[in-house]
Length: 334
Ligand SMILES: [Zn+2]
Image (cartoon, rainbow, N blue to C red; front, side, top):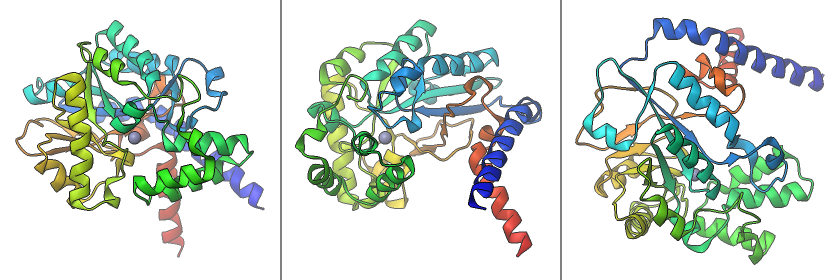
């Protein structure tokens, strides 16, 4: 019975995903995206599917270089202009449809994206967690993933261990990693799971298509902290990035997307202009403003990226759309 139910669920999700891709051009015809900015976020890039099979990183949010190129081509072919953070200050033309590429965490493998961006002459924003950079420290969610995967733990159970850890401050998470996997766990396994180092950030700061933003010092999920602690996390990261790049970041991406009123206040008080969330949705022009501006961002879908779906673009991912619809149906039946 459960098997049948899960098969039906799979079918439902994939039906809605396909419907999204089919509906996308139709929806776009009615809901024109002129005067809109779409921001997308990425994490790591694999050079191929084979590299994914190494299981050195949690593959959940990563895609291949080929998929990344398909993504760029899709938006260029649909007459979007790729913009960077500096363009937000100047504003956009009335008839422009704009897209922005952002990368979270600061993986060394993002160099692959930078090569592509430089070739296409497209800007990208890279949000860095500086403690990982300074200490060449692997990201904790990858550590949990790769050790547990090796132990034969199911991806479902790995995901629930990761999400359990997200309710804690970085000091607890570090202690947990240390006690569970040993001190060596913080050492990256390869170039795939390692963060950028200081020299690399310093060098990339001279690339005109690269700008850096704050992702907190310890990749701290800010809703777990007091206001003072939040400011400390933002400050440490900003100071380090300023030291390396000579520019004070005016943009932040909240780790794991978590924020609340206190987080927004602390961010504004620390002088940030732009806060990138993970709330799916488009941003409407004009967006130049003196106050802190919270921008919606879409998660990039790794499947069929070249037909990036309508369901995603009206504020849902295919799976969440299906989930929401099921909830509605349940409510009606009650
Ligand atoms: Zn992150």
